[in-house]
Image 1: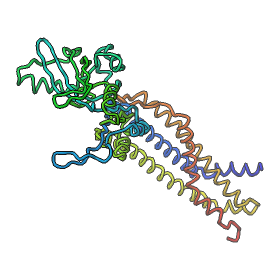
Image 2: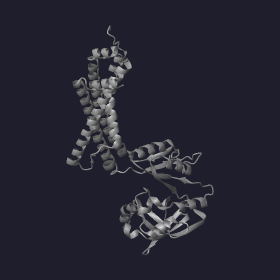
Image 3: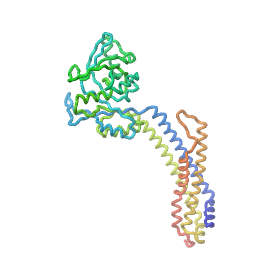
Image 4: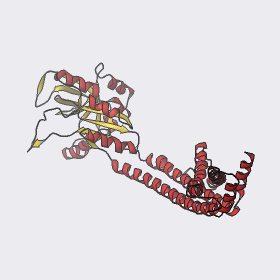
Amino acid sequence: MIQRLKLIIKEIFRGAFVSLAVVLAVVLSVFAVGLYRIIGGNLEQYIRTRFASSIPPDIIKVSARPPRSLFLFELKEPEKTGIDDAALGKMRRMGGVVEIYPVAALGIPLEAKVTWLGFSYQSDVLAFGVPYDLVSRDIVKDRYRQLWKNPLKETPIPVVVPRNILRSYNDGMAAPNGLPRISEKGAAGLGFSLVLGKSSLKSLRGFTQSDAVIAGFTDQVDSLSLILPLKLVLFYNKKYDRGFRGQYQYVYVRVRDHPSLIRVSSLTRKMGFAVEAGSTVSRQILRLAQTVSLIVKSLEAIITVIAVIAVSFAAAIATFSRIEYYRTLRVIGCSRLFLTGMVFIKYAVLGFAGALVATELLHYAARQFAENFHLTGVILSGSITPEAYRSAVLFGSLIPVLSSLPALLRLYFKDLSRDS
């Protein structure tokens, strides 16, 4: 046993030039691959933390597909085309979905009456119901927030007005008709009346008149309708339509990141709904990250292939230049398996040594570069994680082992007797 260990040790240190070439090939390949990974990792981190996070993904707007139409009129579908609670449940379970905000239309006539400084105005209006979380930041007072959370128990009814309505009034109605322009600050808190179940065209039995107040203005809902609490809208829809079940005209879906936006949009379309999302920027960000990853992996592959070719030639030359020595060992009793294993161990040890040297050089180079170069938004790591260290050592050890396999197989099957 001791004699065999001595033979293995001698084999490792024989052929110093070839052994040095193998070690250098491993050092250069591991160092280059590690360097590319550090650079690629920092670029990907930059894209994620500085680029992708500074341009947050858009909220996806999901709506039911419009029914078929004939001339000016829509044809009724045999089944309801709205978004129901089952569809909401499927959307919530999609990976990457942070929150969903269903929006329901008030399905009864609605009239608004405004009296202010002798100015009286009434008009038929439209209304949508939205959950509190969607417009909470736009509600100006805590009192109105409390009203929004409990619209069926307390009055007045809090109403959030889309800024599109305010702009349309100021730009298209106030100036041409000589009416005063309205500011957000002045209009917030303005009281008026809502008649639920009655309009100039239709009146339902048991309609309700209630006080209301403008609780704020929002850009979250792109509509020309008043925004009411979702609980209130669902209550009146059920009150006047006994067969009503949770049906929503559209849903806002907030996603975690840009990949989630692309994935959730695709899954929602497969459910049969129409999807509106600003996915162009998300696709560009993903394409950029994929391009960086592809370039880094391509460079790693090129370096690895070059190292494998170089070590393969070195292993073949070193192995077959010592055929006479192996014949001698075979004659004195060494088996083919031992001879092949001895050469195998040699290249594994050389690869391991080269990998250790490369990781130390990489660690030193990364630390020096991080200390002396500072790029805005790019954080260069000056340390190698234990996982990366183990991967580098394994990678370096495998290069000469795998590269020497052709030579090892040929050595094993070669007749090493004196007569060959």
